[in-house]
Structure formats: C-alpha cells, structure tokens
Figure 1 (cartoon, rainbow, N blue to C red):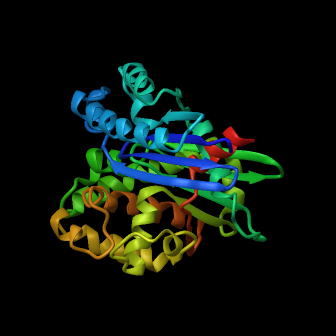
Figure 2: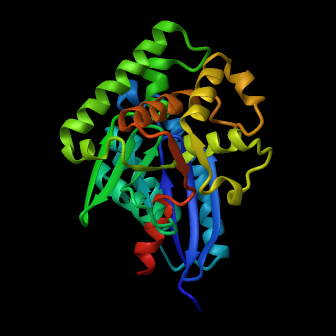
Length: 305
C-alpha cells in the first residue's frame, strides 16, 4: 500500500487538512474556525475558539481514517504561538488527530510555505518571493544564492482587523491606523532582512492562503471554488486596489453578497488586502501570482521524502 500522510494546519482563521501520497494530493479540506479570536487582546485562546477547532479536527481524523493515513503532522502557527495556553491547545489537538503536533516558529513556517508554493512553479528570471498572509502573521520568504531569507511579520487579516481596521465600513481614521501598523512592520522586515532591499523592482511575488485565494475567486467571479481556476491565477496591482476600495466601503453583510466571497472571510478580507497592497508597493511589483500550494504541500513533501 502506498504511504499516505496527512498535514494539518491550525491557523489563526482557518483549520485545514491535506491528505497525500507519492502520487499527489488525495483530499483537501478547509474550515473557518477563527482560533485567534481575542488572542491579540488577551494573549489567550478562548475556550469556544479551541472547541470550534477541535470539532473540525475530529472530522479530519475521520477523513484520515477513511484514507488509511499512516503518518502525519499537525502544525499550529501565530495564534497558538502568541497564546499563553497554546500548549494546552496543542495537547488537545494531538489527542484528537493522533499524529505528531508542533508549534511552528515563523522561520520554519516560512520555509515550509516556500517549499510548498514553489513545487510546481515555472521558472522565472526574477527571484521568487512567497507572501503568506495568515490570520495573525504574514510570512515572506525568498531564496537567493541557495540561501532562504525569510521574515514573519506580526500582521494578518485577523490581527489587523482587530487592532486597527475594524470589521465594518472603513473610516478614514481606521484606514490610517491600519496603514501605519502595516508600514511599521514592513520597516522592521526590511531592517531585519537586508536582502529584501535587493528585490525592490525585481521580484516575482507569489501569494498564498485565504486572503489571496479569496481575492482570486472575486477576480474570476467564481460562485463555486474551482482550484484549477484559482491556482496560479495572475492578478494586477490594479485588481488588488479595486477590491480593497470596494470592500472597504461595504459592510460584512454586503461583502458576503459579492460573487466569490468565502463565508467567514467577509469581516477580515479587507485587512488582508491592505497587507497585500502594502507589500506589493514596498517591493514595487505590479503583479501577484496566486498559489493554492502552500505550507500543507511543504509538510507532506517533507513527510514523503
């Protein structure tokens, strides 16, 4: 029997599963669980947020059993890293899924995301940077001369929403607060990783995770998710700007009526687009390539290698 493995990602906004073997992906699942609810304010995972995630993990364990999963890895990222009761969550998650579980540091999260996102990319003369906009953190990673340079920013669609932008129609004060928050984190990133300065005006930007995937669905007008149309969908800076302005002027209920909006992202997607636009401007790039391959693909590759 072919070795079947599972990768599980307990992110700040969603909980995801990839079951794969040497022939490729067998099953992908994503559920919005908002594990990071209130973490930025309280430094604690709320009981109801943990239970939402545990409920989904029980379903995922059933899927793993049906697929005869033999090995796996569960990773937790920003929300669990930042919470003082993160180890309690990890213990509970591990007991449910029955595979190894770990809290990833930002550098390892960026590395695995880079491996996953670059598995099936065409070659390009420009260096390839991955941009993984999560709920609580945003990872940037690029390989230059065989060395991976990465940075994990304390920015994410949930964190920026809760701390600065708000979930409703964006006011001028909230717009300014979000832009300043994002700009300060980008300053820290460029100070910490001088190599990023070499990429300004010369980088292929590949976007990962829910904010970028949902933007791709909005741009293509997909009523129902179709991986083949979202994966490696190329979007201009103008598309990002158009949707950022449009969603900023809408309530969450109005955003939910937009064709392609993923339920559970209507209150935080605008913040994700603020992060995306700022990163594109800082690197002076006018195009973004969406990738549905990400950290889960990096994990399964490492398990199967």
